[in-house]
Image 1 (spheres, rainbow, N blue to C red):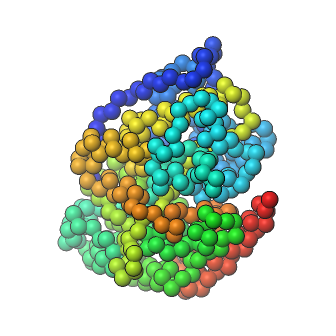
Image 2 (image 1 turned 60 degrees about the vertical axis):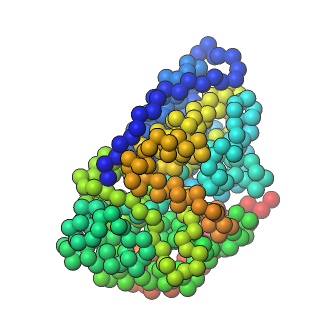
Image 3 (image 1 turned 30 degrees about the horizontal axis):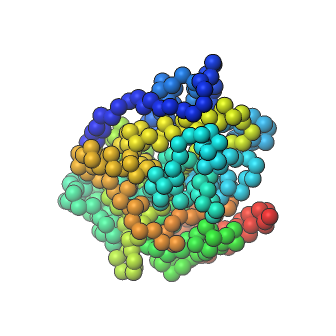
Length: 437
């Protein structure tokens, strides 16, 4: 894919309520973006800092999502938390339950006298970070969804149509077999296996990942991931692994690098992989929708978000909160949002940014870049709204442990999924008891 980002004004000027400060107020922002995405984050901070003189955002890389969240919680307890903490979506329920540690973004914007309209944000994104009482708790930032990335050059070499990527899982198997026959040692792989092959898989097929509408309706939710459909899917992937059609490359986004290098021809991964592909891939890349099983009624439905949002930590000064509010307004500006979306592959968090990008001709210039957006803006059901569970980070770790046993041929799909449910439910029960008011 030959990406071409259309020009957008680099600087956005905005007025912030309140009198200007005599000295710049520093706002500390801890994040987990590295590589090309780290450059993007630094450019956002620089753009805001150059757009006004009252505040200075200091963007600090704090390691992986797990590491930065742990560091943020520890810093809050020690009394030196940052103003803004980037937290990945699986930490949402934990952050919401952290009473007194965070300042809801809706409350922050109101108190700062800043312009803020929750309805301006894409509902599928904003709804995930909204409390049951309708109050938006954190600021949507780098929201992504999972898509199928594929190597057009490898497809062509294997006799496959590079403009007709597989849409269903049976088609993925057939494509992988042709890729292997043409000499490809890694026809298909996956990043974030729990997110792509269980969480998004469930929503895409409109089946529950967990009870209580995937946790949105109560902390007494329990996993529903050992259903016949889930077992069928993991069995299929296990068979692909045994045939050398699916090659497991490790946890998290470990599979991204072998895809970008050309070693693996297909990868179900975050839409934000676009930024890495754009900068480092030496082949023509394509983007397609997440595969589905055509015999499942209601599929495909919609995928759910990944990525992270920005949480405001409590205990800061009013002037500092005004700076945070000004920064959030800057990030939400349609021009800034549209440029971020086009540069990274993350979703536009506002409807205005999507409209601006569409009108600019970007999607026509870069075929496939609209796939993540269209996957997310389909009609959402209670089963496909998203997943909000306590101890979710630990549940994903359990999934990794159990699935690795399946890919290695040491455990059946059903035994692994039954174990995930048993172990995961224990963590959910523990979270429920710890957070009962």
